Amino acid sequence: MKKFLRCTIILLAAVLLIVGALVLLDVFVVRGMFQKNYQASIVDKLERLKSIDEPKIILVGHSNVAFGFDSKRLEDEMGMPVVNLGLHGSLGNTFHEDLAKQNIGEGDIVVVCHTTFADDGKIGDYALAWITVDNNNEIAGLIRSEDWFGMLAAYPDYLCNSLFSWITGRGNRDSGSCYSRTAFNEYGDIVRRPEELKVSDDFFKDAVIEIPKISKDCIKRFNEFCDYVKKKGATVVIAGYPIAYGEYSKFTAADFESFEASLKASVNCDVISHYSDYFFPYSYFYDTVLHLTEEGAAARTDRLINDLKTWQTANAN
Picture 1 (cartoon, rainbow, N blue to C red):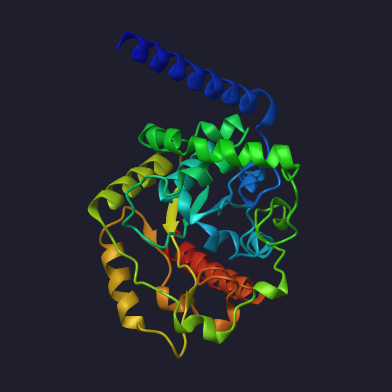
Picture 2: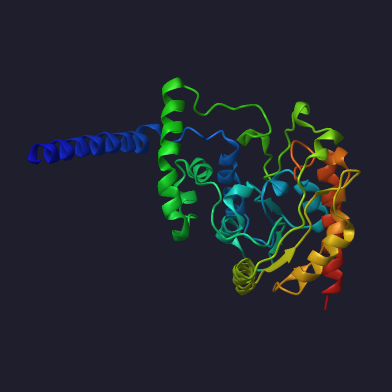
């Protein structure tokens, strides 16, 4: 029995030693293999956000925001600098809101374009979150205590990916696709969209497009975010997101009108869009049901400009 325990302890010690060595290798040598990845654009987005101290428009949401706007046109029309913080839905609503909190100032307009108001507030894909953090310590500070266990559980996956990229020399390669850091412009908009990823109408035969849900817990968290922004002297508004509407649609404008009414009655901010105004034809979509082509992004930008100007007029004193 003593011999068995001794062997077990030696084995565990050896495993811990190996794991510790790999972690140290990752921290001091390997880490930073994803600095040309799509997720690494968060560094540039945050840098732009922190560089603008005058009143600005901050676009908050998932990849529908990244692929969904012409920020220069929005900036020119509204007369305010624009920062597009859109990144990835699997990071969750709260992560994107916390990203915006890094520099919210007097007179800012925070435009939120969430596709759901029923999330649990946590990160949905911790392996993706590790790639997003990579060796960027500033981004690591955005991980909340609620997500620490999930991050710890996903670390081996990230470690293996990092080591494989380092050993094979595949780390920090620009894929040349829309899913790379260089696909973004200085505002944080996706501007590179290879033609091969443009979808056809047939793509929407089996596409799942749901009416957004609302939960009390999510609304509570979101209203706390609205209160935080208000204390900073800024304003939160909710705007529409792109909704593919055509011959295969299983919903109507009335479905989104019902959601819109419920949302307006729940949140501590203005909902400035009619969601049915953001119904777009299939030809405006790119790669997924929430990403837009350049033409689609231009059309959506025009709608947001109209919504913002209408809202400003209604609230002018």
